Amino acid sequence: ALESEAVHIFREVAGEFERPVILFSGGKDSIVMLHLALKAFAPAAIPFSLLHVDTGHNFPEVIDYRDRTVARHSLRLHIASVQDYIDRGVLRERPDGTRNPLQTVPLTEKIQSERFDAVFGGGRRDEEKARAKERVFSLRDEFSQWDPRRQRPELWQLYNGRHAPGEHVRVFPLSNWTELDVWQYIAREGIELPQIYFAHEREVFQRAGMWLTAGEWGGPKDGESVEKRQVRYRTVGDMSCTGAVDSDATTLDTVIAEIAASRLTERGATRADDKLSEAAMEDRKREGYF
Image 1 (spheres, helix red, strand yellow):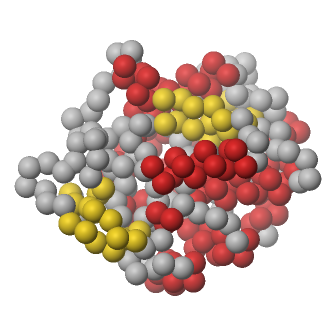
Image 2: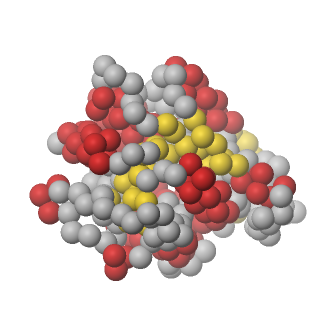
């Protein structure tokens, strides 16, 4: 049922919009989203290009997977680089080293310059409180900003894509999925993932209760010691704010069992950028973030 709903959403957007694009980072949700898009239009090619907002602090395994996937399916990839904006003086590095909050400007400017009128994202309602407020079709104004009061009803899977010039719609085909649904679907479909999602030995250090990977982004600091641990990642984002979890789950079955027993959402457990304040995600979404 979830697959059918997502396929319907992809086809609805293809028929209703002129320049849709899929956000693709090489993370598991965007991988499942691309898999669904390929199914929706098979045997034809998908009628969308891909867009990645590259923070410059991405996990190498994930970037390698992204590039291999684009080549395998002969897709067009747009890249909005945070580093380019820093080099030009438009953005400044944050004291904590994280670049996740810096993605908003490159994302919104790329949407405007390429005139994308529908942007697919892999956000799910179970991830975080602000994302639970989203409709499947989420209207953004001419500044790419989100206003929860402008959310439209979506009764009987009827989606309203009407928008004024300069506005666009963010589309969330996985809205009604849970983390467990995503993993069970990956297992059912035999979808390849970056190995970072499975338990492996990695050099990490602890900060604010999370195991972070050392890197050029600014970790570890004095007093933070690096050690080798058996870990895996539940979600993948900027290296500076995405924590690993201790795990022995090396197969899809053991990952699914681990997720089924968990009482913390993946973002709640491993994303430092969501812990900046109670409304951190909602504040960023109002500014144009996904």
